[in-house]
Length: 148
Image (tube, rainbow, N blue to C red; front, top):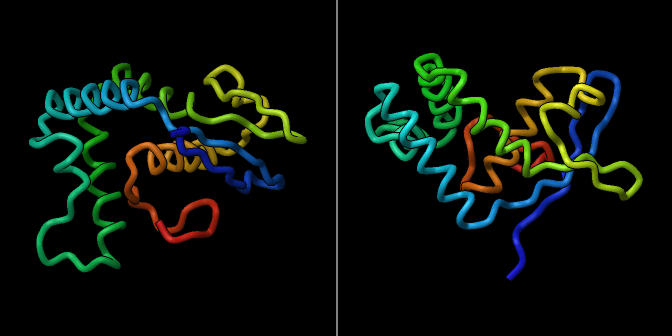
């Protein structure tokens, strides 16, 4: 069975960029989840990634995305950026820029040549996270226009 992949388009200021996102291998994703859970636990977030991504009882489905995004942002404030950066870069490593059918792998060194807005970079990483985790990540609609 092939790894999942999807092609998305993101608006980056005055330009539209296309990207292919490819799912990590099972081993890579297991390692990423383990490292994320360890980092969150060391930052004092009980239950790690799984707890962070579960809305509490009584939160309506429509409100869950905003609630979880707020919780995630608050948790990031307690995480050491030097330890977080490799996890974010691993999500970026799942992405390739598509130009006339040719893939150019995204790296921290290459994205500045074509992404101008930091929000575009954030959206790209969130799309990679959605594909790899296999369930919606909070933040509203996906870049493809489909509900998250």
